[in-house]
Image 1 (tube, rainbow, N blue to C red):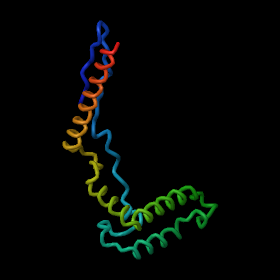
Image 2 (image 1 turned 120 degrees about the vertical axis):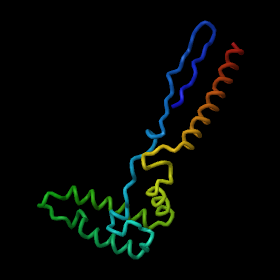
Image 3 (image 1 turned 135 degrees about the horizontal axis):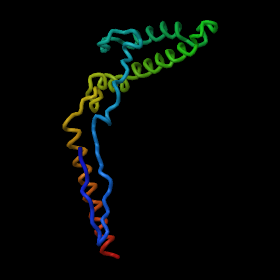
Image 4 (image 1 turned 30 degrees about the vertical axis):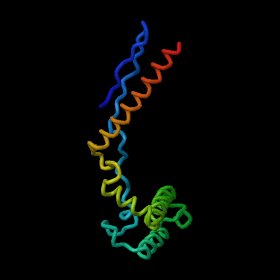
Length: 146
């Protein structure tokens, strides 16, 4: 956690509210595993573009909202599942999005597994300290002008 010191200006004391940053609060929840959504092998890197396309088409025919029986009451569930399938297909069929997804699954992109990396915290603290210094210099310059 990092909190900024209070400032004094003349006889009035201006204290900003303490700034508390927790990198676990910044971490997103665990990303969905698109390989599991498409019922592919969870290692995923073995699945080629044709296998991804076949899996998507096979599952999309089962879950498409227009093909879902209207009387069963599962139309909302079919729609939700179809959207999830489509997101998985789009992410895995684009090589750049697939690399990003694979990195997120491994927890490389910013501690998405819920853990807080010390490096990230140090970077945040250094950035906040520099911003605080700039702000202090600006405030002192304004106070000197008045």
